[in-house]
Structure formats: C-alpha cells, structure tokens
Image 1 (cartoon, one colour):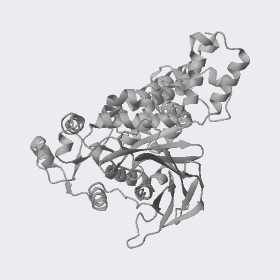
Image 2: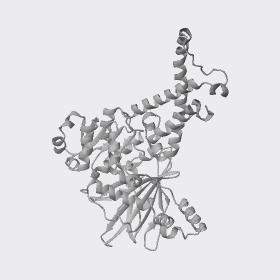
Image 3: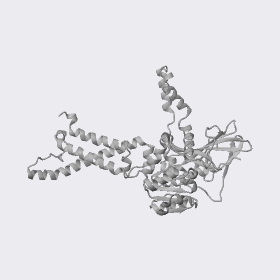
Image 4: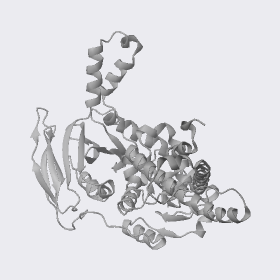
Length: 474
C-alpha cells in the first residue's frame, strides 16, 4: 500500500480537517465554553484558527487514548481465545517506523475520532450560542441597548439586533433573527401594545413561545392589556412592570442568577451642571461636561463651526480611558431625514444600515473598487496604475462594524455606529438639529474612542448617550 494513503495519514487528516468543518458550521462555539463570543466576532479568523488547533489536539489525544483503552482488554481476551492481537504504540520514545506498522490501530483511532465528531455535532444542535435573545420595538431601542450593554459588560452572551444586524449581513436580515432565536437559551421581551402591533415583534414572540419554546422574561414597559390578550401564555412566565433600568436589571439578575456589573462612571450627578459653550454656524451651542476634562479646544472654521474639540472622561476604569471628539458642519448626510417613533422596525433598520455605510464604505473606496472591477477600464489600466490603486485601497481604514444604533431626540431618530479600528473601539453619533433662529440644520458628529475590550466599552454606554443628549443648540 502506498505510504501516502496509510491509515496514520488518514487519522492525521481527520483530526485536522474535522475541526475546520465544525468551525465552518459554528459547532465549535457551542461546544467550547471558554470562548468569548465578542472576541470571536471581532477577530473571527484568529479565533477559528485557535479553536481548530485546540480541537485537533483534543481529538488526537482522545482518539489515541480511547483506542488504546478499547484494545487493551480486547488483546487480553484475544490472547486467551486465540484471536488476532492488535499491536499498540509503545510508551517508549516515539519511533516513526513502529507507528507506521500499526495500521489496524490507526483505523480504529480514525473511526473513534469520527464517532466523537458526529456525537459532538449532534449534541451541538441542541446547545445555544447566546444566553439570551432581546425582543423589542425600535422605539424602545435606547432602554434595551442599556440592558444589552450591562449584560454584555458582565460577560453574558446576548443576541441584540443592534449588535448583530450590521451592513455585511443586512441582506440576511430575517435569517439572522431566526438564527438568533433558534440559538438562544431564553428570551427577554419588552412589551406594550405597540410591540404586539409590529409584525416582526409578533413573529419573534410567536417563535419564542410556540416554535422554539424558550423560557421568556417579560418586561412590561407599559400596563397595556394587548400583549396578554394576544399571548395568554405570557401569564406563565415571570413579569416586571415598568421601565426603570435598575429595576429591570435587578429583576433579570434575580430570575437568572447572573451577576450584572454596574456601568462605568456616573452617568449623572444630581444637582451639578457644568456647561461648555462653543459655536456651530456662528451660533452658540452648549454641552454638559461634568466629569469630563478638556483635552483640546478645537478650532472654529470659516463657516463658524467647531472641529477637533476633545474631552476625556474622569474616573474611567483601569483597562482604558474614554475620549470624545466633536465636529459640526452644515447638514450634508443623505440620512438627515430622520424617522419618527411610529416607523416600522424593518424601515428603521434599513435607515441605520444606510447611515453606517457612509462611514464603512467611503466614496473613495467605492470609486477605486468600481474602476478596478469595471470591464470598460480593467483592460486599459497600466499595471503600475493598478498596483497604485490596490495599494491605496489597502491603506484606507479597515472598519469592523459592531453595531448600528438608534437615539431619539424630540420623537425623531438619530443614529450611531459602533466599530473597531485597530487598536481601539469607537462609537460615532450623528445628531441632526434644527436652529430656529438660523432656520438651518447642522450635523453634530461625536466620536467616542476607547482602548480596551468590547465588553468594557459597553459599560460606558449611558455615559456616552448622556453626553450626546446634553447638546443644546437653540
């Protein structure tokens, strides 16, 4: 038999390729409880390589040990009964020539590894990826995001639409929701009459109660009767009434046993105010800066707009420091027309995704790709020019979008985006305000920067939201 098809090579091939197949099918993240899902999402390639190597080593050791454990008693019986004895590897220093001769042993070991892989794959179909799925109406996004941020910052794996539906996966919107529902251990539903009047929220609730049959915690944000009229099964599950964030988190903590960490920094200091004044379109605006230190005053441009204004947050955690940069300009974003709170969830997400693409797919990048991929120009571009264009394309910032968010001002939506730009996490808010005196709109862009883990960054959520909300431009 040619050496390249020897059973030992089959065994090595199986223990190498089976983990890669399982990684492709996301079986590894269900089986390995040491995985941090947030790190996995941020650095998927590195994570899959590490997990595949770990699984390969594990399968190899288990295959050899279990095969030896099975064949040792077989050999004892075979010696007595006169059956063929299967040679085993010796415990002495490894001799490659000896291992090559153990053909039957490696056939058994390969079969055992395949059985282990099949067993793990079957077990994984019943295991969740996320600990909880959050079901909510878009008008409640800020409150739910605060809940999600606290849970994520506490090490709990959460399926939250704003962190899961990103530009790269927008086309699979519905399948993303279905996958999240199917692979979450339980659900938390933020209910009121408006929730059950949304067809998408009704689909989620129906799946949780009737199809996936998941445990559900109900957060009744308003004492509306319609949710229980439409879903009487909700009476069988724990319920919290109200929209107090700390009360909601205490309820979740009591029902699940999870330890939920507090947010970093004081989101508000009662009775204390410290306003910083500067200009947009030569008209003054203010932001509340209590707890923040001024790093750079910025500059006023020829349009009378501030740019480069920078603050840092005092009392931040040991793992990193939070900075914020503010610029403002006359409104130019194509998404300046904001949605109202009655907007359908799907329409709201479409707006969020279009907004985030302004930053993740800048015009220069798209233009270069269009030229390089164009049939009209591709055959006529000199090699040197093509190399320069590819070089420029590779030098443009590589954003890893992690979330698209909704913020409400005066009943209208404003947008934010969370992304990773090595080596920091960023959240960029786009706030469009109208000045009655000038009868003009302006866009205020706040960019928060944090060097640390995504989970720690989430614990600054209310601090960032409060700073943005303090903006006043009359």
